[in-house]
Length: 532
Image (cartoon, rainbow, N blue to C red; front, side, top):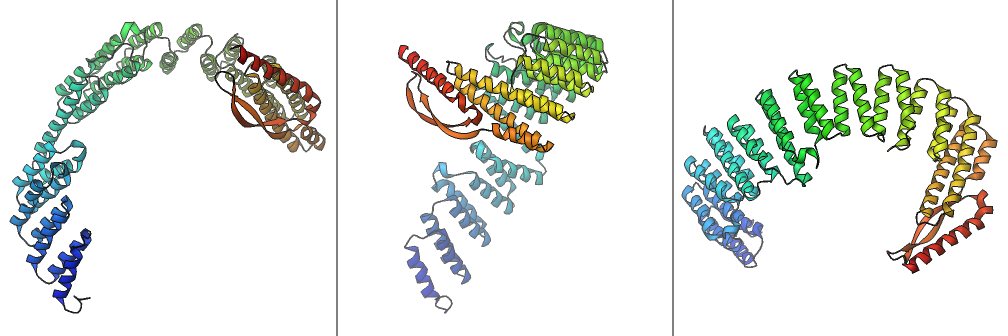
């Protein structure tokens, strides 16, 4: 208000009284702008001097220096920048200061001064904080026509950092990757090759598989670079062979399917199929893994060698007869070739095994195959055979849906009834068990039964059968909340937890019997806890 009334001295006094209260930076800058509006540059300079005493920060000094620069006082501006590094603690002098100082020298048309500031900053500022400096320095050198020089300086600096890291830990494979990538982008083939050779010389301990994973990828990157960038397939081949030899104890500890497959595929690109087969045969002899079997089969498929594919599948199954993947993919290959009888024979032999890692998947594949061949009777027989082995609710659901899809609603209804009876019986048997898992199994089976009844209900709804719908509704359970004890490691009750259970109305008559079984089960647990 005083300024608006033309009372500049009064306004200045107001500012002076305000400054005694140690206001924020905005107040000081308002005072500076007031003095500049009235042409009192010396007063503004005095305010800035007091400002940097109250706020000894880089930001404050830079504002002061820019003020002098706007007054065309280049020498005074430089002096302010130089005072900053002398007057502020070293830990407060950051990249922002050097960047502002260098930019000032650029504007002052002092490129050598600017270059010296950039270089000093790059060498002394923590690298994590210097990214903007690097960018500004590169832009500066591009303008001065010395881009190659600055880039080489930056790469040299980064190279030194990587080397320091690797001196501390030669098995820091991430650092080797970073160094190799940088050299690939900027160095000669000799230097790149030298970095890779040094990296792969640092072999991990035999029992440290997690380090071996990273280490193997150094070999892979090396071979890929030789092949793609240098176009030297022979050198790439040598790299892969050396890698395979480096894996400890002839691959007894572990092996890497990927390296075998990459090496074999390189031989294919070299038009040496015999050598590729030899490599893959060695791989199966040393490490008969699923990925290698599949990779070998894919090679022979691409070459159109179906009989060789069959022999490899046979070897896979001989090595691991429990592998559903092997049986399934063998059958799928035969089916894709139109060899229906062969595919059926493979699937039949597969489901006849006493033990499989995922039997339900192979049965499903077999059933889907017969359905795809429009052989409903064969699919029906497979469902019946499967239900002799399992009472899983999903099998009954799938079978019933198969029949309903084919228009056999009565057959589907019968299957749902059979499934409901089977699951009801399974729940009773589970409650009869006395081990700790019996109760959990019973709850799981109840949920299966509920899912089966819901599917049955959908069938009756779509069929429009009121009688059938009433039959299912009568069987549907109530969902109730119950409590059960939580047992500690000694078998003692440590608390209670709530869980949801299903109560089937038609089973009420069996409730006393089930409660007796549950009581016996609880008594058994208590006795076991006391004895332990």
